[in-house]
Length: 506
Image: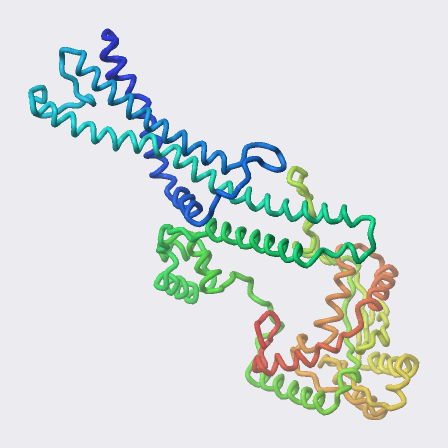
């Protein structure tokens, strides 16, 4: 503004221009101190903790001047600039007052009194001189100080690299001297080895010191939304209505969505999951039955270490000619720019084939597909059990000879019929008691059928093809199906007869 006002007076405009660089430099210093305080403190910690005097004058790799030489040059240049600047400033002020008939202050400024008369003029000039020394020292000292701190920080990495390069050069020279000798000559002398080890240890310590200074914890804005009181409010709202979304909880508590997400997941360790669909709402008597029967099974397994291997589990299921895959299973990989693949809703086909299967811990024993138009009645199930006995005699002769195997099937009406019980009693086949509405305790339901149908989903078959594909899949997935029973019995007891799948039960 002063330059614009005095455009017609060259001397006054020049005086104003002289102050412009000082104004720009002081503004830059203030901005650095205000907004880069943490960086400056970190550089000061580097200067306090590390040395740079032992660096060589030249970089051994590039041949350029090292950081140590640049630090000495900047220190020397800073002293010269400060000395020259202050000397020129005071010499200019002194000569201007001596040669001119008018009286001039060291610095142009306004005062509420008349400073042109003695001794006020001399006192004001002395005060301005002291202030000018402080201001000039501040302006001329900060840039070289900042540059020196940056160079000291960079010099530590240079020291690290030079030390590692020195170790490498020693190894190369020693290998070159020993290249014509025997294997014993390739062993580094003990004195050189300890010297290299000490240098390497210094490198490691220096690197750790650099990392520890670089990663110092900085003071930041204190958290207000993730304190105990807020976390308790979020917990109460979520427990009052577990179906509320994060947005609804945030609106009720009065904090941001991100804060609610952080409290729920990191502090309360809660997750928003879909509800587990269970086969039936169990009554107290049914839960008690599940606990009693699984407790008996656990006792039998504890008394007989080979009990699980003696179980032959069986059940029936439908194999559809087309069974659509769920949405998650239909996911495909795509690039960012490629179009998203589309699919269409479809229902399970009406065409289906019923499969009856029996297996043990070693694998598949017997399976058959029920002819179209028939269902598993008590008479048909007796015929299936006869064919099962023949399969046991052929594929598990040790079980047939000892006749110590157990049949595990569910409580379907055909399985509980009188003629089926008479058939089992007549041939000394022990059927294990199975709790009602308990697919989580039936190996075909929790192990075999899900794996079997995962191979058939999303593909279209005719009746012959679905039979062939199901047979191939059975032979691949029917091993070790009964080994998980013991763990499931224990979980059922711990859960007090409730359905335990999907729950954290130990």
